[in-house]
Image (cartoon, rainbow, N blue to C red; front, top):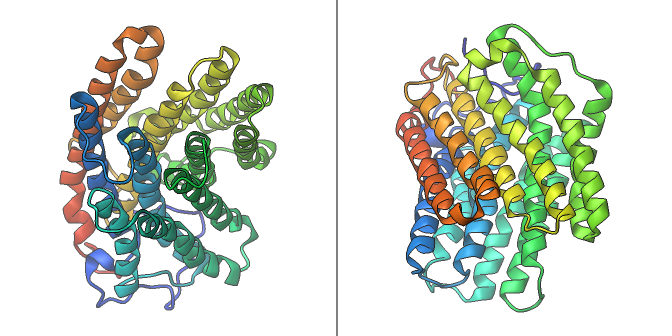
Length: 402
């Protein structure tokens, strides 16, 4: 059964429908941003793997480690979130979001810094301003319909985007020499803000997807749902403050809350549906990330393993699951895993295991783990890109707008 895949209540009005004459790739926000996000994920990891393996990096603005960290969040993850929000906010509010020419301009605003970071075309300040601009614009674009519809439960979304934009600005300010030693905490804080957005989105879509796919909607624990977002925000706040014991306590608390949330979503039937279990496994990596982060701070170890549990496992797997499902639902197709897509999901799981667990067990195998993980990531996204590019670029199969 095809579903649009966002909420239990779908609001549709003539005003909110995209123009039927709009070129298909620009009909709704998920189309250009998912397409760009998928193929950028391939290029991001190819460039990172090549740079780390050879020691050669065409430097213009970022050094390689900072570019990799920055683009994982502000390149790939932000593209997927933009595509989802530009589509779902239209459904939630019944009000229009960009399509056609305005959507093209928004996509180009995201794309320009990705292209210009490698060529000496703009001075540093000009490049920084260009890169910083996209997230506030996105916050305004999706914030206006949310405010107009007075949907208080959605108010945190544009606020989280604004905080995410501030993290991006902080990283640029260090590169430009205006601030010192802020890139690392700002990048970690940005990852946690992305997690907070996923937590909000997951609470909306996972139970709905389960109901549509397996006929079972998990019963929400009201206390857990109320604590889900605040617990992540507390983690973000303690990382910003930097107090180790606060970080440990709050991270373990977040792990417990989201572990209980995940348990409440479990149903054996999920294991038979790749389009569901990818979301559940991705969410499980978010929980693991909180636990690993607390352990790393407790033992005075680097937190990179927790960061990769969040980025590769949580963000990578959850966003891949969202894109593959949403693209099918919003193009009028049946929600079932296309050929080779489960292979891509398994490769993403292997990529996360290799990057997170193997170096913890065998630190001397770090280089090997990086190479295997990056290779699995690249192959997974190439598979998805091959299977989904035509879907994202063609009109709906049912003839409806979008």
